[in-house]
Image 1 (tube, rainbow, N blue to C red):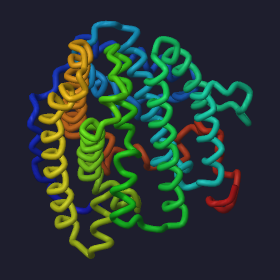
Image 2: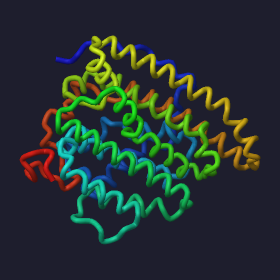
Image 3: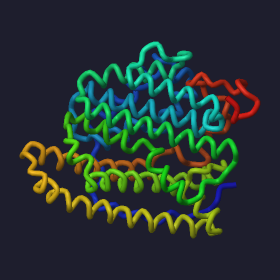
Length: 351
């Protein structure tokens, strides 16, 4: 039985999301791509992907982009990430850190262009190689480095979370706050905004305390909102990486008290984001940026705002996190996209 809670209204101080005129074309195109690489092989899987509304998410994140190849690529990346999370959260891979670890290393090898290093091909690896081939060639080295670092860190955090699941060890609040923003592909999505819009932020700005505050406060707002929306479903499934559940367990709070506490944390992080945004023009002046680089910094701030607002609007309408959507009713209905079959090991922690 689902836990009854009321999610307080989250006041996001940015205009409601705009949609890209090409939104209606995105789902059929990305479904065709996913089928071509074996990421989607059944009508059940196609329906599950449809409920996730990746096309709506990308439309919110890139409302003004009119280049079809760039939008297609962005959507295919977000589809790959959504199906990755299927394997971790809904299927059994997230309960099996031993077999999962080398698969994540194979993904890193693809992003590092280390050919011949894969132990065994699988749909997720083959699709990732296609995405990286379409992405890396027309992006600068600094962007490729950041993108790799963000994906590699997300893989590391997913592995840590899988150990908690496999050993049935609840996350403490400090660990959950450390990992949560990195588990949700937020920095990854912002990197793809840069690539899709063809704006390349200088390292001097990107690595500054101000911009890092913008990025990771945005990540916290987005992922803690996710924790509120997904709370009933994850409370029922015993998920360990939900901040509201971590607070409830560690501090012995009632479900609504934990949800209200996370809501206050979200409000505080929105204020952190707004404060850092006000500091960005002063940072640009102190770094003596050119007019072009100042314009890029302002565009990237606008992209982060659309990331926060778009994620909020998507979360409020997406069926993925509803406890009664039937998506995880049978874990064995999920294709094995990682090449980690449930029979590989009797003990989910064994290699």
